[in-house]
Image 1 (cartoon, rainbow, N blue to C red):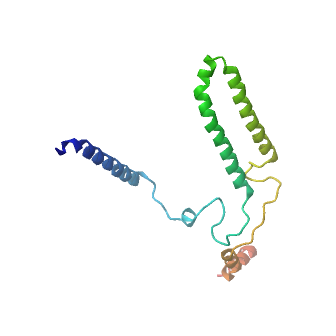
Image 2: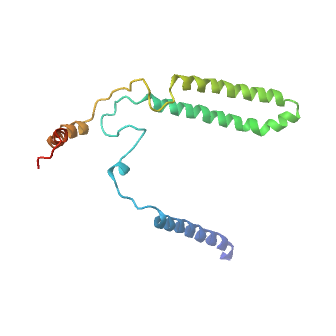
Length: 162
């Protein structure tokens, strides 16, 4: 009576063994972590996560995100067009469909050329100044610490007094 569920039981056992086996193999093969502070630090959008919430964000993040959305929608709109292009060609509308898709892509390429010419997709700015931010409390405390100041003075003088 319960024999009908044997397929489900066997499938579940193999699925569990597959997952556990992959986790064990990955644990054995992956490089060992050294837990460096830079590797375990929180990173979100290239901005430090410590400090006040009301800071200026670099506009480049939003420009890249907006360009991603635009070209992602372009691909989403071109897939259905590509799926029916053969049918449109058989009906004698292939040239019109090709011109419409070409116009659509050309408009987006003009936008890309404009953004590229303005330098908005250059990650490192060549001549424009980046907006300044107020340093957070941790940075100020670290830079004003007497030990850091003494190290800096020692390095400038070129000798070690100890």
